[in-house]
Length: 127
Figure 1 (cartoon, rainbow, N blue to C red):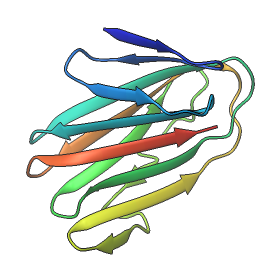
Figure 2 (cartoon, rainbow, N blue to C red):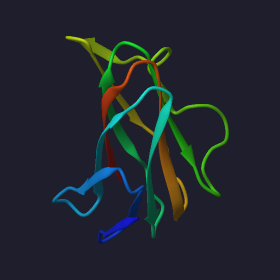
Figure 3 (cartoon, rainbow, N blue to C red):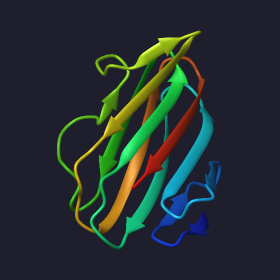
């Protein structure tokens, strides 16, 4: 696993995952081509309460879902589901934005689940 230390977060990524820390101290960028029925993960630790702003970009065909897990993460289904969420669709791509209430400090894992043909996905998380 590769670890990138940010001022306010530690980002952990699976071996085959490309993750890059943006220039700002409170932003994580994740990008990968996910095969059919695959998942990608980004874990981060926040040291103070944080409200997440998320941008998910993916191909329109198929279904992409974004989940959030962690001890203090909200329970339930996907934060973003390209089938039901109000995503902007243009030129074969879905662009989904979301803002979520502040969560307590802790470790959170964003998991992108891709069902459908292999597709390039991008996730930007700001807090």
